[in-house]
View 1: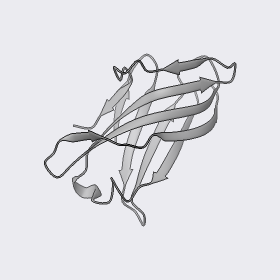
View 2: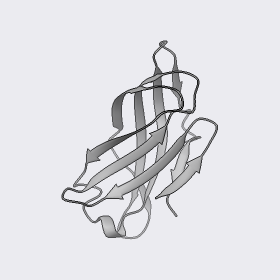
View 3: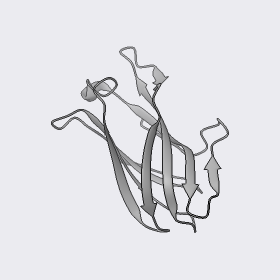
Length: 116
């Protein structure tokens, strides 16, 4: 596991190949607002070691109060099937807060966790 800290997030990312290949994200709400929905973007490495952005978004409904930590997991046999050799980059794409406001990444992947 590794940590990446930014002004907007703290992410711990774990790629799991337990019984089912999956992407497990553990994250903490460092904002002063309650999060009710979150969307992550992910890039995985291919057989040549190049990162390719997943065609899928990874969405989670949440009820995450400020300062609290939670996790989300998605089974993913397409991208994580060969987990021993796969690396990932994960970033926040969008967050919806309880008060109706949102954070939307401008495409620069400001909140990026990069597995080196």
